[in-house]
Image (cartoon, rainbow, N blue to C red; front, side, top):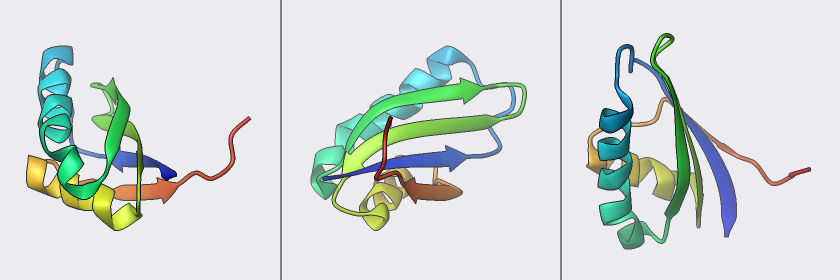
Length: 82
């Protein structure tokens, strides 16, 4: 499985509870694509959300987010960690 970091824009003013709801929507359908969302981070001031996931492909990650109602603006495979 590959590891991915994705970026969402336009979440200005979103609360922690709203982030948890969006994350739960991903978790509810992630198995359909063989993806697992590990964690999500939010900066409500800039409206940026970052999600860490594992899965078979960038496209699979994008499909889950799209189906959950919050498409990712960018998805990056991150093959190297320190």
